[in-house]
Amino acid sequence: MSVEDTTRLNNELGSLVYENAIVAMQLDEVMCRALMSQCLGGVGISKLELTIEELGTLLPHIETGLKSFLELDEAREVMRRLHHMILNWDDL
Image (cartoon, rainbow, N blue to C red):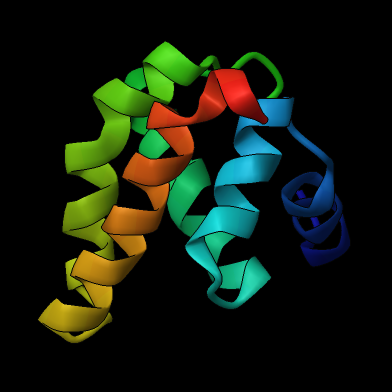
């Protein structure tokens, strides 16, 4: 697979839940998509089919990934935003 193919695949839109999670993180989009792809791939979930329930179960994996490149306070803030998104999903 070429670099162009990989870039195209990483830039394809995902489910509404996936796209809202990317926005909710309020970080660099490419970084968020890479992190989410890694977490989803680890459990065999497609970004096209990600549900709000599945996102909730992925939170520990996402948090671990965030802590690998963010300060602890920053990672906690991103996680707070994701929790808020999940808890208010029905209102979106």
